[in-house]
Length: 227
Image (cartoon, rainbow, N blue to C red; front, side, top):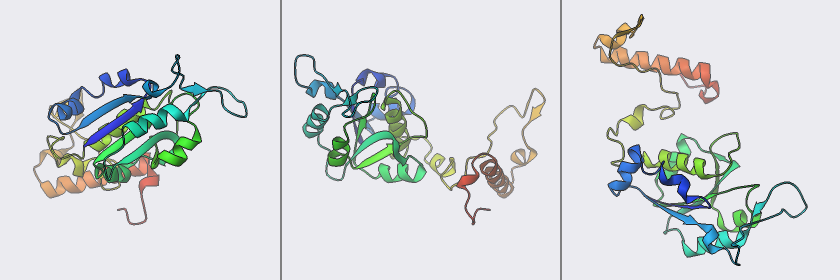
């Protein structure tokens, strides 16, 4: 799986991309992330990448020229996709992550300031994606989230492939509570059903717990057939 991130702050990714599962996946050649600073494609002595918005208003808007020049210098492979991260994009959910995991090459544009010139979106972006109903200072944290979520579906990245099957959202529900040793901690005990060895009873209990948590925390995830 190949990712290319277009960003003004490539140094942001030195931590997220080199630790834990992503770091191991990169070392093993399972996931490759290239970082492109589109300021390098800006013209002029000052390498200007932003300008005040037409029509007035606060902040600055990223210019189209350096971004498109960076895109043209780094085109996605056949079957790849170019994504812009923005609060008004399609919500990033489990189904979309699975769809993106089928792409051989994912290019991600990280916005800054008041956003990018809309002509970039209209002419060069295949999909706009949002990681939630809030605003970040830039697209870099969102890009790290997207890369992490999609990389988990790359064969070999997870030590236990079955983890994908029982995680939150894999069946439309949030994952229920998990317990490990010791069986009692400061007066709080592990539910008896998990200690009894009856696998069907454990599966039924986990299903009910997942339904309960989803109904309590995210009832919007439940449809008429849940239960």
